[in-house]
Length: 333
Image (cartoon, rainbow, N blue to C red):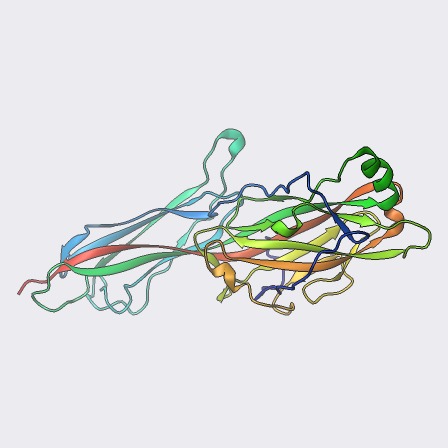
């Protein structure tokens, strides 16, 4: 997602909507939806370890974190820090308790290149601290430390829906016992995916095209955002938040008559001023939210033919992942 995208969101509305059949839409029972690759973490913690893991009070411990870009786009503004050390673990030189955790900047990590069988970039950062002070006589006191990584990532994708003029449908499909294919989805490999809800996996649009039918007709479209990563979006400190655009493309200059609180536009801008309901469910693994919109299509663009309607997604977010370990500390009498 480019930095020119101006607005960062809290999120999207879950609008409940029934897709209708007949002149509005028709279900195809023969062709399943294409949803593309699913599990992906974007940036992954390849390893996080401490040396040593069993120590005496006053010893120094080195924490090492390695991250790898396992997704399909560049990971930018990557920052790593340790949780569980502030106010407890101590600076090496002064021996004073850490007032703030130390943020380590990780370089920009490029994605893998499957064409050349090349893995994504990796990088490594380390911290070294003295153990916390504990009461004398305690043995094997467990000190939990968590590595947290935040990074900028984005999901791009396209959803394609078949739109068929009614006359063409009757002569080229129904008369020949054929059915238009259902919608398809393509996605980048990223921790947030755009998917087709099961309820509309065979949906297509049937445009009424007789002289008496309306010049502009309205049809529902529905898609789902799913968190398939091991963390969750945390954009501008807002759990589940994303930003970006959803663009409607096709013959006859189609527009969203209503989508996420915006009306009669081809491009939906998702930002802090968007109508919003919670994408908080994206805070959990496999959390998902379904979004429903209404499209306006021009009848004359579908007379005696079928066409493709496309939704282009360009969504950005700051993603949050963690991994924990434990150091065993002992204090002599």
